[in-house]
Length: 297
Ligand SMILES: [Zn+2]
Image (cartoon, rainbow, N blue to C red; front, side, top):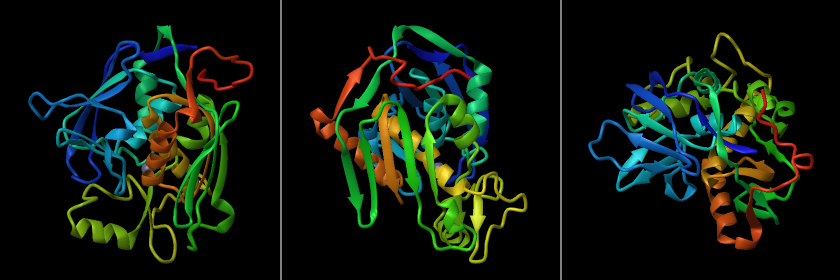
């Protein structure tokens, strides 16, 4: 399997979730083995910021990367789309401190990346193969990576809320790009009215609206159009996890299991894997008939 980038650059303008301001995003092809980098175009001589779990300094509401005090926030939905399409190398230029929220899912990023076209490159794709179980926990929340012949996510949330029925709080996803687009990419982020009011009073989530999130009050869902899937909430947690896990800088061969995990635990889990050199290996040669990770559309 070969590394992948885009055929051509592509630009989109969207709203920043926290600032409420328009953000211009340009995604450009990048050389083999370069990985994914962000560049702030609104700051002179800004450093390249790698999509690297060790640069995540703040996981309040989203995954945020910081280099030399310069921040790029809310990277997880775009990175999820990039991981979902198996893209290895990109330069992502952005005119503000956060990636636009779009419709709260990664659907528009998937569309954009496909519009630019995916270019196979001349060097083999590298995977991080999990070779022994690694887990992290925080109270009753936990997340684990374990050996598996493919990439699989088993996620469970636990909300006691009339808008989130108990039988919609678990989802198992066997990764392929096709499956990602159909089952995961369209699932929107969600929030509770009382949290959103609090955030707005603190000058956060100023761009948040029913156009880019499922919003719940105490009784149910406020969005007139309803849900895209009856289990859209847990599917979005899987979308987030795929983006967060891509901060490991490699596509994974392994199984990710999680209960009530979020950006902070997902990040701790990658750090825990890197902390144990016997827990993973970086592989290029593997039997594709035994590792059925499929990026074909
Ligand atoms: Zn999210």
